[in-house]
Length: 396
Image (cartoon, rainbow, N blue to C red; front, side):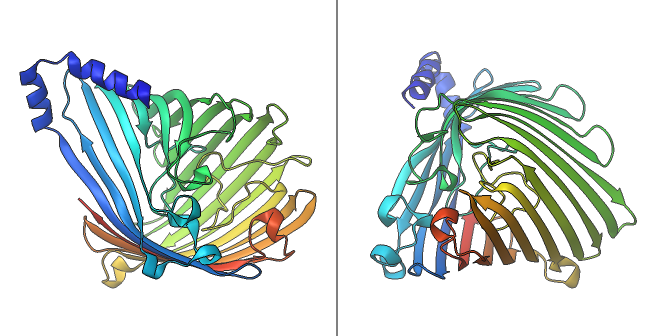
């Protein structure tokens, strides 16, 4: 953080007063106000609930000689009258001990010229194994330096380093930026290429070298087959190879396939993932993970020799005259081992998303997770639970 501020000040000091005024005048303020409520009915542990209001407030200065500065505050304020006390408090929306928080989620210097850009500082990143995963109050953000080049038609090349991250997926205290392994990792070097130059085909490949954790190769491809103006097929495949460092236990291969069929307002899909790791496990990375079978709650993260499949159905109600309304129902089945114990988990999800206009949207989700082996402490599933989440958003 100190280094980011020093860079920002150095750039600012190089500008004369008139230029600073011009950059400030062309700057933009944006943000989002979000209210959220979560309720979790646990099979073994006490039930929990919580609610918060907050969001993001961001300012990005206008460009000067292709440089821009950006800063954003992330806020979550507990609503005590709708949040449980003590062990009944659900911590998904808060810092430790169900405390409200405010932190600097973004603070960066951005340099962009022609097809090249470089962003240094706290920022949002979306790659297969490091992503924003905006599923509670705020997206994950990362302390990183990321370069992007789009000079080849249909191709994007990405490279850089990631040092720390904060957000829902970072562990205890959402508002604190943590090292990638939670202890003493020096960070990760990442490189990737995304190609969409072939019609109806998207391919990407990524390499991650994460200190004290693993070296990872990940690739996937999606091919779309239009059958008519209102129908189509989609086929997808993915592969990941994890090579552990420092006996981290993160090792093995993961395979995935998926297909979906769309006709008018209805889309039906199936997906399958398989991991082979001989007593070790693959992980989501730093975010929601890229796996085709991932559900609202459960993924193959941390499962040894995982086997998982998913069936999903989606309805776009715009074709039925309700513009902006989408419904989804999913079923997932997960098997494997965790800490030497058999693990079998099933999950049902119902998701409703409604976009009223470009500023206002809402989403509601219900997830029912059943830990068949009741390995609550090892699985982190509380022996199973039903989780209800509602979020209202106003963007400006």
